Image (cartoon, rainbow, N blue to C red; front, side):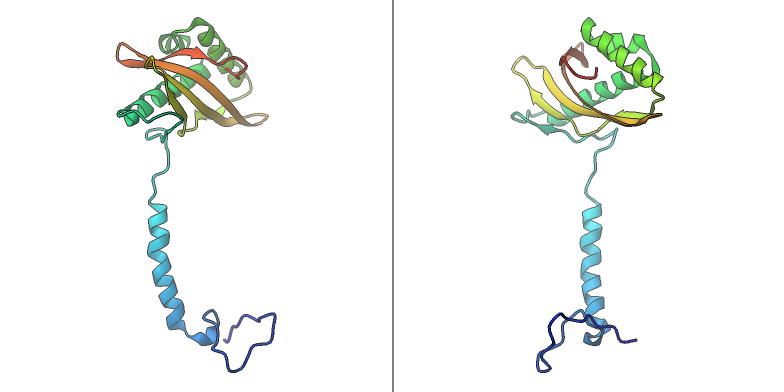
Length: 177
């Protein structure tokens, strides 16, 4: 079988044949594939964010303990969201020290439950901003599905460490929770 790509302009018979034609030989195609496979494999090894290993970006100077802050704050966000969606008011109150924020988050959970939540979770790639007082301002997305379609809400909260754990201390107004 002789496969060739037809150029838009007539070829010059004296010019060498392009490498992509079948007449150029199978050895060249094999060489190209051999070079591409390791390159494509290396690209697939790049770590993607997950619920257990979030990848945070920073809008401020990155603190020395950035990885621990990223994991800790995202863990709290995930726990609060899971508790809210399940209707676990005890966990929401334990992890959200602001009464106003706790009520908004719990109301958001009730709304999502009523809408038939499926696979509601925080995207594991939040943006953090370290504050001078030691708190961290976090912007993240909540995604999932409900009976009516896809859910995608941007949220912004402030977290701080209290007694060795991260807790929500404030919530931005005009957000879904």
